[in-house]
Length: 399
Image 1 (cartoon, rainbow, N blue to C red):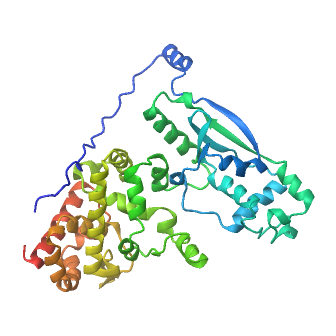
Image 2: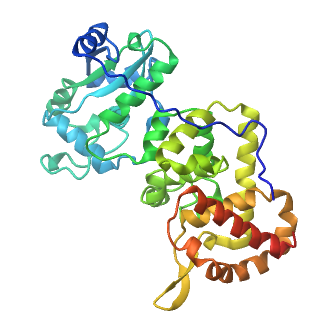
Image 3: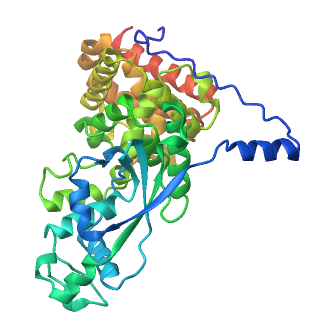
């Protein structure tokens, strides 16, 4: 069966390696003096009491795509307020001036949001140790001297000025560079968290939306609810799920689209490949993105209807006994999703034979165990798994 690609979906992902010229010290000094790759910044300090007004002014863009899903708990918010009470230095926030006197928040959204929420009595302090007597208080119920002390505190910022970048492409590279470096310490970001922040765009937004599709969540053990629309207990359950919190669910959607390209591109690291694919795919027009979104939904729904919640489990042998590996794997996900996406036109045939497909799957894995047992990711292995599983499906449905 030939590969099916949507019109405009196939992109050339070949990357030419830049040749770095050898420069003398004099030429390096000239480059430095010219100011190449030099970031222009300024610093500012904001009284805490002014932050709610600043954030409501429309001059500060709170980019939700920069935000990781590791939302702060009430205890963590409270610890920030306790630090302010004690006058403990708080790390600066980072802003990018995208237009004259208009800024987007690159780093520090949680701090800003917490301060704004506290000033509006949005949560009660809890879990404080040094100032345990303030537990259960809101801003407006704090003792007057404590409240006045907080009002005197400042939050520092480092602003990347607009003149650093000469055009939109340079601005994107700049923000990626800065974002990755300011997040190189502390809690390490996952590849998808970084990708989500520095490669925002229409394809990234599509992946974010599709990551909450019920069939994907059910097959990967992710709570189906959407954060903020359920009860506090259900929100907590979602935030405690590793795949959701670390945005692995979003990467699963992205890899489905990226793996529909020519396998020759997979020879480099998946992280670099997914970065480059997302950057290019953000340029897709809205009609193509809609088609791709529909294809993903149809494919994952079909897989779920045929194989259920165990769709991406592997049948494997351990100590001479065959059994299911009781968790989903990307080896199975990549292979099955690609195969079914290529056979959407045969959906009715597949559904007619779904019981046979499901019942025969263990025998398929036993017959092809060497191809699926390890995490082989070179192009030849990926193509081989597609061929084997495609042949299995075609034989069962009579193609």
